[in-house]
Image 1 (cartoon, protein in one colour):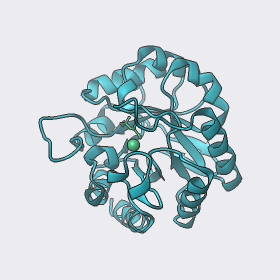
Image 2 (cartoon, rainbow, N blue to C red):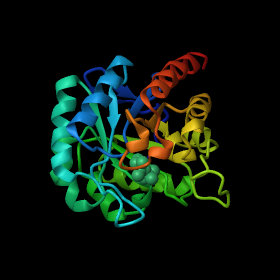
Image 3 (cartoon, rainbow, N blue to C red):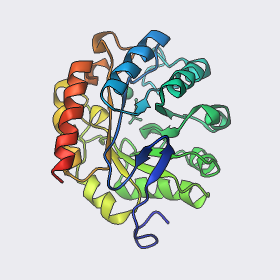
Image 4 (cartoon, helix red, strand yellow):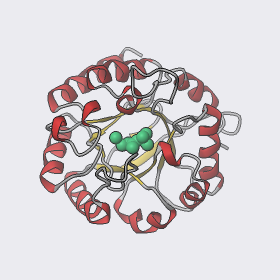
Length: 264
Ligand code: PEP
Ligand code: MN
């Protein structure tokens, strides 16, 4: 069902208020790794609106490698995130980690994110097949392209056709970068599937200075959008500061992404 054999026409998702994801437009989504506070969100939202970015990412349920790391503000954080975003015409992308969260989060999100650690959580995918909200599925940490498409198939076959595929890097033998951003996946996914493809250069390379180059390369490879991490002071971010752009870097990247997209 997610294949081009089933549907030739590219899927375009309409999130309302003039925000779309899919062929023909460049979807830009930015925000902190973790939602931390009202003051932090206020600053990020102002920055996004100043740069015409209408989609904000930010986790309230964080899958952390260590149980002692910051694990997110949970539902209280999401409710605040939602009310602040609504007031500003911003759409929310946030991670859902387990089946029980789908229902409680439902009314407060615009796009459910399935993280790389949950790409093959088939119960979660089944549950998301039953909701009427878009789902962005990230490629598994060691997942193949075919496995990502199979995960999307779970949600699609469950009845939810509002899907986005996200290339966020895979684990390889290379240790110089956090992950290996597999840009090969972009044209391959675009050819195999009618679904929008988004690139996450922040987790893909994991090193702040190199994020812009990989984001631009993602657009040139044919991505329908970019999702990246930004924070007013990346040094103090509760998570993933090492790969998070400050607002100057982020504004410059947005300008360059639009230029590069116009060249396609
Ligand atoms: C994130 O988006 O902050 C995140 C945890 O991503 P991933 O699941 O790709 O590691
Ligand atoms: Mn992160």
